[in-house]
Image (cartoon, rainbow, N blue to C red; front, side, top):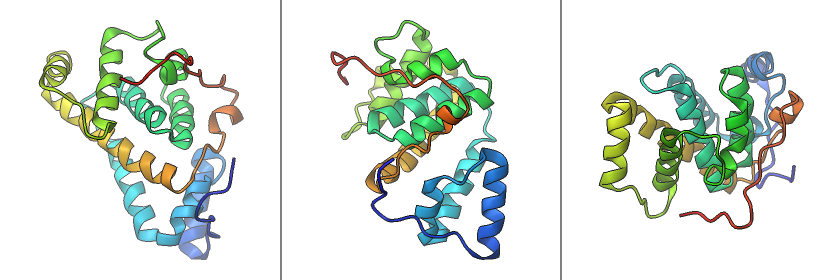
Length: 195
């Protein structure tokens, strides 16, 4: 991993010790990103708090939400989010063969048409300008229903909220997936092109 653009701060004090203990219990290590965001604890706590609330949402299939977040991370180039969500897929009992293929989802034959539609939507929401169209939304609404569609859209928005600052701050993978013995993520072929 290269150096972050803002060096990670030492996580100190009672609140810092509590946070480190909680994170180590859950993840086994404190991610570099926590040290970077520790420079502004209000931002860190707000981002973490929102992420915690998202985990309680249940209108949309967990696998679809994970693949969508990973598709955003791959599209934006956030190796931290891609690696972490692959690691989390294992913890959520999501198909790991599919999760490892997300970076090359267009080329892969492991995904269902719905999963591919979800990842296309995730990329369309992440494009600048956004390239979502009426047909894309209508197709997903028909397959998911309105409540799940709203939830999926919010999860993709959150993925952009976390991936873009990580890339801007130079936060890269902490190797969660490798540390637990997962196969390396698939690499898209040179011929793969974003649409």
